[in-house]
Image (tube, rainbow, N blue to C red):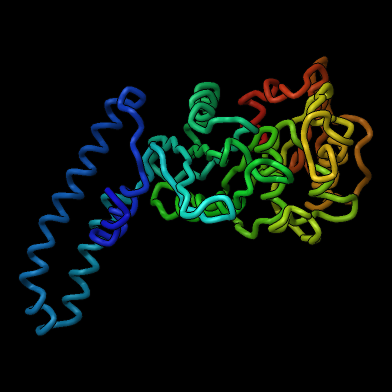
Amino acid sequence: MTGKLKHLAGWTIRAMSSHRMPPKGKRKNSELALEAIDLFFTIMISCLYAPIIILLLPILMSKSSRLFHFIALLIGSHLVGFASELQSGSYTINQDWSQEQDYERSYFVHAPDSVEPLPLFIFLHGNGGNAERSMQGFIRRHKKLSKRYNMVFAQGYLKSWNIVSERSQAPDREFIEAIVTKLTEYSNVKGSDAVLMGSSNGAALVNQFAIETKLDHFSHYITVVSQLNAWQHDGTAFKAKGLDNNYTESVVPLKGKCLMNVSGANDKLVPYAGGPSKGIRAKDGKLAFVDAERSAFLWAQHYGYTGEQLSQPSESSDVMETFSYLDGTVTHYKMKTRGHNAGGGLTEAMLLKFLD
């Protein structure tokens, strides 16, 4: 169904036009049956009401405007009720920027069955990543988490996110904000307590999003193998990226959030102790990073911590050290034996503990 048909049945057709179902082999028979029933009743009701409205319109408008408005409201509520729930599948947001015009940007949704609205959990892949494959692997490894959230996996333009000198110049923060604004219109999506998680290049966008957004739907941010870079915080203030990626404007991020960072002590790409990366380009050579423990402290300070930076971990084991501020509001995990694969040490139990 094309965008030209959007106005014919209002909200119902808008949802269908941006929602492409995944292959049947990837979906349960029960899901297919429910979607078929949902579509059948939507079409039947639309077909049933349309002729009646056309026949009665002159009478209703001449007899009683109140009666006409009541019936219109009743019919509208039926149409919305049959098609207002977010379904699993692929969706798009159209954006314009210097590299593209009216470009369809994809994201993939896993919407679990639930008797009450569930918050959003948005995951951002790393550089070179694929959102659909990320969804399949993440849901397979996080079965409990995937029942508590409407899971969303966004695709970066040219498989990357625009931070400093990536190939993509896309407006990625606006992309994520548009996804949230659109999906929270559905009746089975909670408008608060959303989670934004990213890995590597995707984690850099999570940091940037937390710095810049004025959208207050999110309660938790999770960054895996990318602490703040030296453009995002210059040692004195958080910086907005700006249209030219020059990070000249100091900004004050929204407060009242929770943030987790996972970093590898042996990471060569995103150095744990800070300083320039050996492999990530930036305008001035190689992208420099803030020390990972310092990065967590800067976020903790912003969220209300008034003490000194922790010099010793709150907890420690053979493989991991935990630095916790504000009773876990800001939590930093140092994976002692890992590098850029530090996310492999982050278990579902750790995620659930942080999100609870």
